[in-house]
Image (cartoon, rainbow, N blue to C red):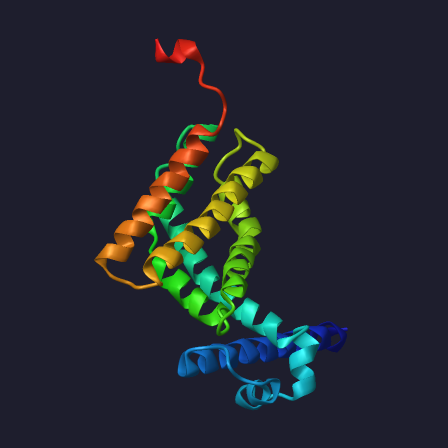
Length: 219
């Protein structure tokens, strides 16, 4: 019985190691060359796996690249988790949860990650690919972030948490596009000022929404 139970575990461990090796190899090649310019054969050789093994784990080279980018952003999710953990838990209301998330977003350093993603996802002359690619990477993290936030409150349900997080994450993707257009992805004091201004506008817009103001509220 023991051998029957451990055999699947060993196969699973082997698959995980292969997948990790492929992603590590892709990341190394990207950093060495500055762009995702490599073939499946080069990737397989660097990962010390067969070409077939690459396609057993990923549907295409683009899938490898997107997953590599998602992994980079996942490291930022860990930072986000630490930031939310250090933020005092409020009363669990919608407003309180929003404040917790936006405080955490202000406390993590996203511009370097965005600059990396832009460089990886932008093929020469294909700015559209970069724009949509960054959006896809942020979308891939939304569920994970929603789970993190949902565990911190019982006052609003999972649906509302998911709506709140997805609104912010999609908004961050828009911030990325405009920040890159205005700064070219430079990492200096001026570009970070632009990032903070765009992030502030996003937070204010989502907080206020587009409902018609109540005249009594201004009295």
